[in-house]
Image (tube, rainbow, N blue to C red):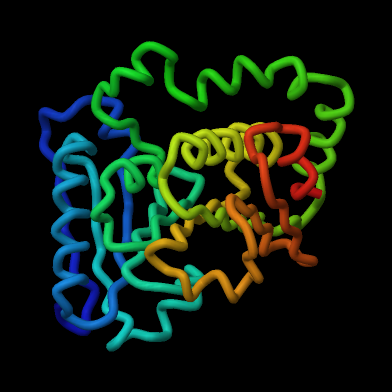
Length: 238
């Protein structure tokens, strides 16, 4: 690692048109050339090579040498992998050792899991289940109001979990379905596993999980408990 941004870029002429039209841009934040940083970078690079069909850019930032870069992406712990494109921006905090968690955090699909093959991807299932509520007159009015507000800043959410359990995965999918419907690309969702980063619980006063925190726009709002119901998730949007 050097004090310059190090880049891994890939792109082969033979990749699919979908990959060419939707390049992935990611940045991995680390702190010094530690074994944990090296391992996280190797995992990120391997994931990109295996999942992104040769169309990606992976930048490496050492915050020990470039601390000023942490503020822009609100980096609270390292390693953190940030996906800039395709939107919406999302982050995975941790060493990326849990491949399932990393795939979910980046909105990539795991490779042919039997459970999802039977049920369908979580977000697709929830879109269908939530459809009556999400298309009601009341929720459409809220969506129009949120999207039409001039100068409204991008919403920033942080979801605290203690493991990447089926309940956590379902919560992430539910939050994304609701945010995609109401905020389009004007939101960010960070997922923090408190088993890996217990020190982050104090920052937002986390006393139970799962807990969803809306950090921006102010004032901050919190929601604890069952996050698989859209009518509850909507409470933190306005």
